[in-house]
Image (tube, rainbow, N blue to C red; front, side, top):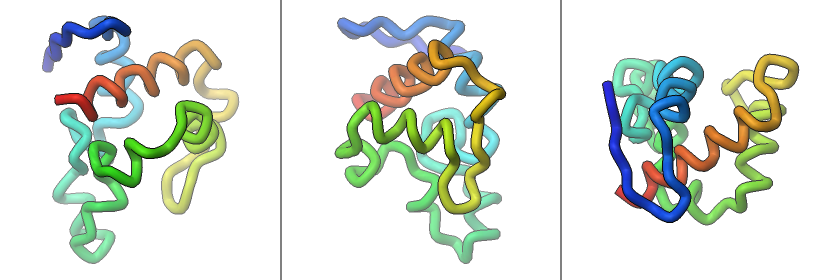
Amino acid sequence: MLFLFSSAASVTYADNSLYQAKCASCHSGDGTGNKKLGMLTGGDLSRLDLTKTDTSKKTDDELKNIVLNGKNKMPSFKGKLSEEEITRLVKFLRALQKK
């Protein structure tokens, strides 16, 4: 799956690949949440939807902290992703929110 974006903070194929490898299984390719996994949360996809207002209102540092330390059932990526990779994921997430 390839996403092309034109924005000031250009998102690269590598950013998309990283998101697909680490996030898409739960948050889906477009960030709206994996519907099958949502069934396991009682059908509440809002916890998995990265495009919703609650998530877009978070600062980049708040999002980086969530990726680093996990939240609720989301695992921590501490020691699994570099700071640069986490920054790229947040940049990719911002591009998804602008779609």
